[in-house]
Length: 312
View 1 (cartoon, rainbow, N blue to C red):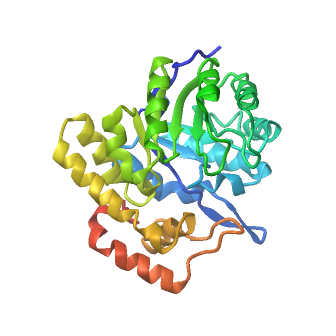
View 2 (cartoon, one colour):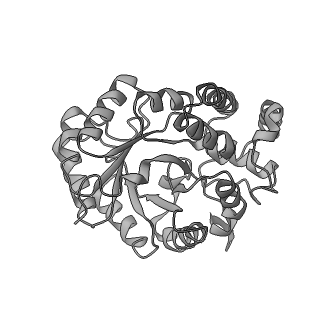
């Protein structure tokens, strides 16, 4: 049985919530692990040692359960090939417990280092229901990271948080609430239980680390892995000015989402830089149009040297 805190390193440092490349299969675009090659190379070169599959940046909720196994198996194997310290976790969030367990079962043999899951989505559930949901997941015997994303899932409360942190198998939390007060409460609760906690907000990454966060999970790292890795390294090394500079650059780059929010934006830029062979996203998401691409490229052009490229 995995006890709380065991495997807590799964949230320490930088985790990249990697995008999901697609390729044509039988007339439809499906997840394609081969498309991760250049991304993985750039991540490893930047010193990143952990990634997460199928989060919101990875279009996780849009990937049918029956498509998971081959993609996750190949993506995990490719990342682990970089070395024994390269870890990978997989998000299995779904509206209900039964679907989460089916998704976890589909990837059970893929070799992932842990599971990530939000509270149930769609409906708003009571604290005891949220706790029961996670009890079923931790019963699988895998390290589990709680993904707090109240925009899309049942929000954590003090009551549900206290109950969840008593479950064996909870090794970490990721917060994307955008609520500084709740984040401070989560830090205190997590650390009291011996559990690590990471921040998913790109514009507040440095302040979260300064407040006691153990790690950061930033989607912009798909486009700019080196600045994100530098933010963590500078913070850990006490290089305050360098950390602030990295945070400023990250905040400026996040401005791409003011032009077009979400996954299509990142994929458009990665395709334009030769990192992805296709910029398609899973339906109903639609690729950026020509005007959006032009505006995105104009915005990132001053930071070209900080961005990933096809030769990375």
